[in-house]
Image (tube, rainbow over all chains, first blue to last red; front, side, top):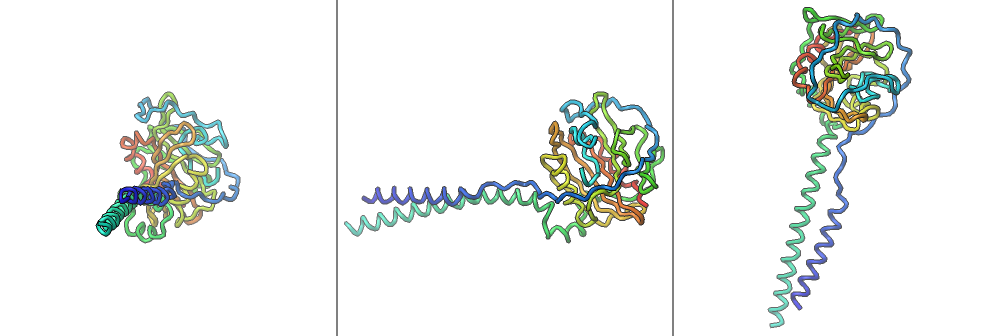
Length: 90
Length: 220
């Protein structure tokens, strides 16, 4: 009789444990997003200095192959896996 | 005997309840710990308590000292001279959006090793919300995950005042892992953004160059 009671209480306790912890799923560490920015004013032509030198032949330890430059979305490199530029819109 | 059995039953029940309580605390404690760790990451981008801390301790930006263009470096300006990027001669111009400047170092296969970009202010970013804005924008536009590792406000650039963020992110395309210094600099006449980035695996190699380029950035 006592053994049965103990088993029943332990079963109930187990159910309570699962119920109590089931709802605490891990939270995402993804920060919140921001609302879309206002449209950008037409950009003027840049006055950049000419290319200074040829590409380096250094090897990357990051692997992952080459990152295609430009040609996607608004032609940002970041649309193709490149680093993100500093625009606040696209 | 019946009393003894009853006491034994009560004792057994208390032991079971104690065990269950211990299990609950342990299990839930682990879960809460996980949540807390996650929230720590989130609070880096949106914690109200961070505000005062970031002013006292510009985490990750003790290296910053506004300085002139290093000897032998080149300069590239935004239209109307709104801002001037300084970069070493080993970098070359990258194709970029009209009205912006991008200089970088790439491998023959096109892998970006160093990326410097200057863009006039285009969104509704402000100095006070810049770190959160930047990471939020990364997640909206380019990144599947992003994490702030340092931030600073009130940095005195040449010709302006800036807010900066040090972060890392994974690109949505190809899942490339980058680290970057991104600063929003308000000059007397215009505001602009400078991004200095490198693959996370190459950060140690190019960190000094990137920091020098940011330190030499000039607004107007």
